[in-house]
Each structure stands twice: as structure tokens, then as C-alpha cells.
Image (cartoon, rainbow over the protein chains, first blue to last red):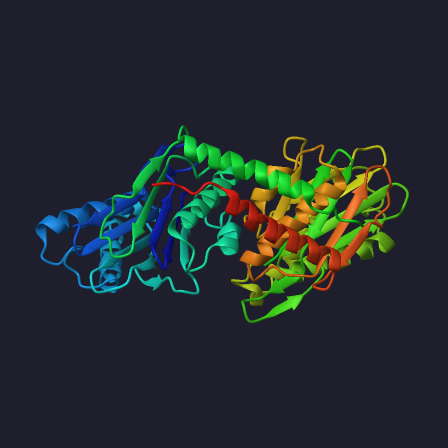
Length: 240
Length: 240
């Protein structure tokens, strides 16, 4: 499985993705699930993926290829809405192509994507693209969207994140959400790919991979884990 | 949906169940999901249920009825293992009965149960009975089992609970786990039914229902919610 979370906030966008993939529990690998596409001036897009790896890899490969080869591509579309529709259509085409092969019977080729970014003239926007190729957009009331194993890490996001949360605070919360998920579910694991997009910057360079040896992330996990235990120990015990 | 958690610890057993049931999102009701059966001397059993309400209600009704009518019943079986097998068999019979009615087509009649308790001569034991009627038992290494919407509330259990956790501490942790789930999932809600069983007591009287006006539970939710925010605010922010 996978866990990815993205947030659309007043100051910009935040993305966190794990890198664990598995086909069954005995076939586990590490694949990047965060992809960025930008031209530094009027298009900055980030894609996070969950689901069938063959499908998501094909989507990313063909999106890249079309930037060089096709007139209509991620860098020429005029709105994030059009980008989401364009990617949803490509997803359907790839699933259709691979389903027509009889070998594919019984295998779920579906995937879910988070697409965030900004195109000059618009505010930053964030979409969740479903396996059917249709999509929903994050809003001021619901500023974060998740794909994959999302339940373990949702409570902390529900408690902390709102539209006005600063980007660095939101990133920290995304990492805590990821840490809870990793602790409770074997199919989500390090390294993490993270990216912060500052509104109107059209820069995708605030990105990093956090592995098991990243000191900042280790310190964060430790402070949170110990803090939770300490907080819990101070609570009044339930009397029955 | 539903969320129930039960723990088998050195000092005894702990049970927490919500009471929300729903058939779709527009048909929501409150039903008790914690049931206890005991004779005060050598049998003390607690059953928590999730899944199809018709099935779980039939199971409870027939278990009670058989205590009066049948020679083999919950109060005469010699081991918790036999109790789990007995309930699993009854579950299969009820599902079989209701599936043979053509009206049942396409409806999931399955349910999951947590069965905990003690029979004189054994240690307290805890089982999870699957919709197929087979079952697993909690162990020293895995002292808690969950049914229903279990993912939201699992991280805090993973962090706090081990076999030697005192019963009152474990109950508090169960309530926090429930609170996180209620916050993140509409289909789980108050009131909660809770029960603490002290090893070798054969008493099922440490039980209570916690509603939205229970002052102790409200204070706990508030202390936890505020404490989490405070702890989070003290964490170092992630630099990118």
C-alpha cells in the first residue's frame, strides 16, 4: 500500500508521500510516489500516486513524454481543472489499454492520484483523482486530501490543520500523520518524499527525501512519541 | 459502522464499544454492542459486536435463550476456546438461515465479534471471531484486538498498550482511541459502553455507559485535545 497526504493552504501547498509498494506481503519494494512538473515561470505541478504501480508509472512516463511531443500537455493547459481532467483521461486510457489484455483479468489496475499546483492567473489548487478518472477539489473547509492507507493518520490532521496553518507547521503535521501510519501499518514506510510549494513562487525546489537516518525527522518522531506518552500519563485515569 | 476494542492484560480484561449503527448514511441509530453473560462464580463473558445488526442481535438473543433452554450453553462450556467455537458455529447457522431467503441477496450478513472472559481454571482470554466463524486469540505480544472502524484509533494503542498496562490506564487509552475515531469518522459515536474485568473476580459489575454529558469523559477529551495541540506546537518545525 501507500500513504500520501497533500494540503492546500493560504500560503501554498504541502505534499508528503511514503515510498513503500507491495504486491502481497512478500513482495515489497521502494518506489518514489511524488513527481513534480514545472517550467519555473507559469506552471508548477506535483503528482502523488497510490494504487497499481504499472498504471501510475505509465501515467508519469506518458505525461513527461507528451511535454516534449504533444501540443496539449501539462505545461500548456490553462487551468488546474483542465490538468486534472487531462490526467484523469490519460488514466482511463491506460487502464483500458491494459484491461483489454486477457492476462489482466482479476487484477485491480486502478489508482488514485493527488494533483496539486499552480498555473499563473489562478490560486494554487489541489485535486484528488479517483480510479474512475473523475476528481474532487480541496476547499477552504477541507484543506487536506489523502490517498492510500489514510485512516491511521487522519485524527492528527483533523485536530491541527486548517486553511490558515503555516506551511512549515503543516509539513510537521504531515510528518506526524505519516509517523503514526508507519507505526501501525507495515505497508507504509520510509523514505518519505516531501515538498513545500510557496504560492506564486512557481518553484518546486523546496523538496527533500527523508530516510531512516535523517536526524531532523528522527528527532521529530522521538519528541512526538515521548510527548504523547508523557501527555497520556498525565491524564486522569477512568474510574469505574 | 462501529468501533470496538478489547484488551487482555496481566490484571484482567478491558472492553470499550461505541453504539452507532447505520444502514447507509441516512439511516443512523443507537444500539448497544456490548453484552455480558455471567453466573458470578465460574463463568464471566463479554461479547462486543460489529457488522450486520440483524445477525448480531440474533446471536445475542439465541445465546441468552440457550442458557435457559439448552444443556450446552455459555455457562456450561468448560473453556473460552469452546465458547469461541460455539459462538462461531451459531453465527454460521444464523447467516446460513438468513441467506437461504432470496430477499437476502446482495446484503452482507456478516459480522465480527470480540469475545473476552474467564472460566474458572483458566486465565482470562480474548478472541476475535471472524464472519466465517473461525477465530484468533490475543496474546502477550498482541494484547489488544479491534473490530469495525479500527484504523483511526490504532496508533495510540500501539504506542501505549502492552500486556502489563494497568486496567484503568488501558481503559483511559481505549477511550482516547475511541475519541480519535469519533472525531474522524461520522459512523462511530457516543454513548460508549465500557467494562473492566478484574482477573479471578468473576464479576461483570465494573461497567458503565458514557454519554455526551458524562463529565469525566468530557474532561478527558478536552485534556487530550488541548494537550495534543500544545505538544504539537512545541515540536521543532520541519525545515526544507
